[in-house]
Length: 289
Ligand code: SIN
Image (cartoon, rainbow, N blue to C red; front, side):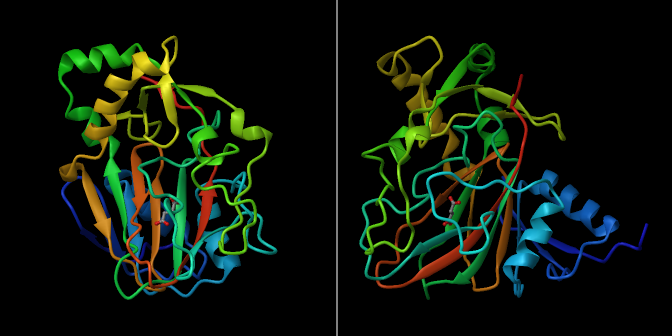
């Protein structure tokens, strides 16, 4: 194996998140460097690289080291790159809910939700437009033993309907006032059941796996019956001490592990444009605890 590069890894918060210096992601990663980056992802759950100059092809090549790339349903991809989701908002677009603006883990409404995502910043407002992540290991670890025991026997239903159904929060049906083209289709009514606590296949750690955007109820219960405990878990998942917050610059890239984190895009940059490109890396069916 080639000699590994010297990487400086600087954590940015107590629960998760680290900046990594010493790699040019436009170049193919050696096996030794890939192993270091993968280890950093397992250790820190979300990792950040600054000052990267990436073409869409280089962004995809870096992401593909971790697995195959998924096409994201409902949203028009970048022209010529079906595996790149452009996350965009223009200053003329005042929106009640920005894309990614509620805590979530990507595509938990699918049977095999993504392993991770790599978001690359192209246009960033002078202030605002940060992204927050939260550790679902910390959220799980912070529960009482009794509640952990209860949750271990539960499964929850995830659905894209509230976001991408006919009246979905981010659907705009190609309205030219919106830079992103988000359309509903028959897949929006899908429902999928996942364990409420999942075991990370690489680290063996347990993570809470319900989120405010896509989790609609516990399996075998009504939405009304589920709401009190689900609301408690959504609050638990977003406790400030379990989060980190990243200030983007053009050229920053964030790589996160969807199996043990949630994230939220701040909607606080009304007067400015913001554009990032996301690749979404294929994952496996969640393993129950
Ligand atoms: C996302 O949820 O994938 C987008 C996050 C962001 O725009 O910061």
